[in-house]
Image (cartoon, rainbow, N blue to C red; front, side, top):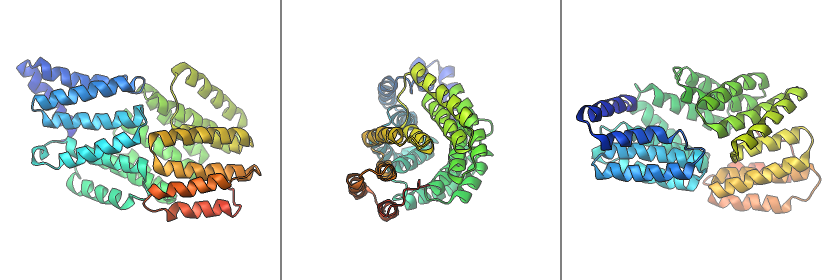
Length: 358
């Protein structure tokens, strides 16, 4: 039984039995995501309380579902990768118990663990990520939503590793599995747009970025919406359409003020590149500093290294001293499992090559 079928069966059972307590837990899970991004602390407290209530009622599978939801709130709402990793690790160990053998949330906890790896150290955990993918594809081959998520994460890993043709093919394949689900299409188009940017396919990137933005706004994922507005401004500038780039940048600033949300550090990094491409290195450095501060706060270790490298690169490009930033980049390698991948980038900047790294 997949998770959707499990939910339908659960809902029918509690409605038939007139179990208002369990029905309220189900409704809480569904309603929380309507405000999780705007008020993540409230969502966190409600989900934690509901998880405990589920455990008190002996609803172990439902409690595991709440863990998957909590992982999303930590990541997308609170941007707290450390807390997400701790919860995903605990939940993955818990999910191996026999009482979860028939709980479809088990396999989704595995993918949340993969997400935690991605936001912590994707290169360092690449072997574990690929092993989890192989397990999910072998054990849950009939669950299209899960296979879609695996395909998409394979594409993302290959993009990070610089294997952009493979990443594009896998991301487009994942799009075929979305079956008009707006959440899946949003997340898939986000990855495709990023891959197209890395490949230099700016017009295609704009198409998928707009699709992602439309779905993000419709599903109230407003930080993702802001990120896509920023990405579109960058893609227009990269393609030489300066008027459209400035229009899109203006739209971004309007919605930042309107929504009153702090952008993701990934959005701030996009804005840094936007200004670098425009030759405004001071502003590029400022946005990169903001992205770095947010990545350090969230515990996204690989991004901290990447952003220190970028800070050193931008300073070098501006003919300013960058030794302190290069040393900070090296120091940040201590928590990464495969530092050689990033050491090559540091040495490239140190040699005076200040081209943007893919």
